Length: 184
Image 1 (cartoon, rainbow, N blue to C red):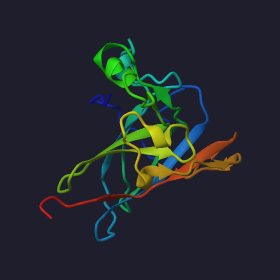
Image 2 (image 1 turned 120 degrees about the vertical axis):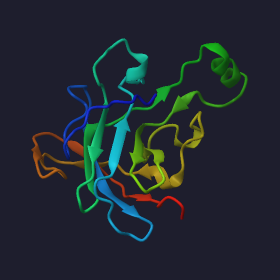
Image 3 (image 1 turned 135 degrees about the vertical axis):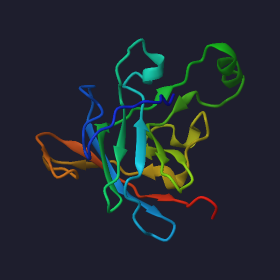
């Protein structure tokens, strides 16, 4: 459900744009295999809404729960969104028939998608899952990997990772992405 042309946002800017939910800051660094920071890395981020729908599934022409962020020179990034929810995949059509003929759950655990595209590096398309979310052990698309499960730590009102502050409870998820240079 990735859509090209997501709007660029500044470090820590809110891609949820008024969508209801608990504020979530996903932050960390982008580094190469040697541990060197990758400044200027583009993070294309998207997620489903509270009804399990992606913008590509909605009759709306505005960007919704998707944006592009660029790392700072030190490789740091900060994405503000709302905590994702797990959802059921559509069960109509051939996919529904296939899943219905098995004992596989038709649910996905809560997650946020990332596409990292940096000149000179292999692209990385992945997602981060909320630690403790339902369906981690039974993801219908078998996308859950232990390395991609991240704690969404509850925080009290106050300072946020983007250098700002928030006046209500929020969640913090910290994750460092590692990129491989092309041809290595």
